[in-house]
Length: 397
Image 1 (cartoon, rainbow, N blue to C red):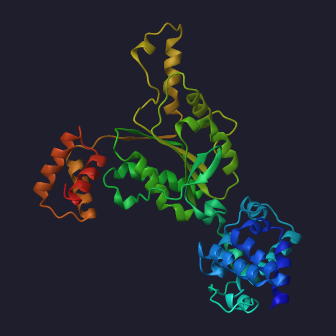
Image 2 (cartoon, rainbow, N blue to C red):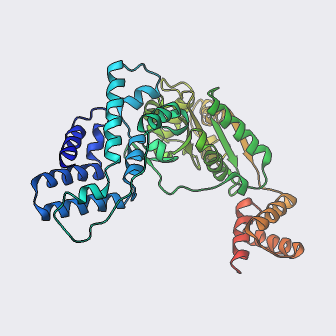
Image 3 (tube, rainbow, N blue to C red):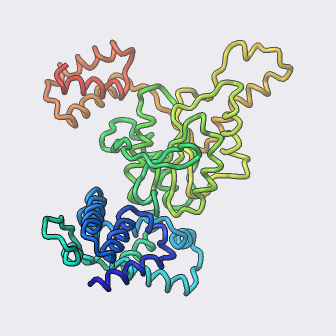
């Protein structure tokens, strides 16, 4: 077994496609442990064994499951080539299968086989192993790339920008479609447009505008969550990051997944550089959105630009041209959906459905009376007000 362990350690150093896995903490500590066993010093062997096991335990007590996961989620040149439909040479394919066999061999190393090589009679922890067919699993992952993605896009479904990099949101809003009540017509339009994006037909860039608290942002998040297992990902871009969208488009254009670039609460001042940037992105830029990307924005303003009476009465000679320009941005969205405050009947219907969803047991007359009183205190009816009211009732306030 000692000779087999040394050979496996050498094989790991020969990785090419999966070479980045050598920096993985578990695999790196496995190699340190294998080197320590070669040195025959008990203290170093025990220390390396426990360090390796500690790293493994922090992720998964099953070595086979862990290696399989890091393998399937590895962001390497092979998976990128396959994702964009490029042909891969036979030499690279042969390299792939050889490396999959090496990693499968690593995944089957048992804790008992290593402990037998260590001159120590005290307790050393175990790890588990499971039988996998790495060749089959990896080919299946390649086949399902349009739905699973690769790298960080296979592990997470919601992302944001950070220092010009796309980073995952590890604890995103888990809003579900079935938790939203009312606005069925508006939701149907958003879903239909999103389905067009997923099918590759090409979706329209979309603007949701209307009163605050009507569920514009929640609906976009819920739709993206609903279709995550069909290959949809959400990337949130802040208003002051709009100028970065062309770089995002370039990075994602060859990705097999579909992406919604989400801009929440969109509005501009008249001299905002991001206004011109977004206008160019929506129509006229050389970096147009591909068929796998659509921009979904929300706003409380129909024309998106904050305008004063002084703007209309300014001293510019061609004031009408300027006004037309400020209003043209909204027109560049292919689909505009209006969210208006619900009337009394719609509001109470939302309250009633939320009460059932939250398990609130209260006579309907009393529930509606209190809901209306709460809406008056909150300056108007909206789905947000209804949800806040039900949450207060639920906790007995």
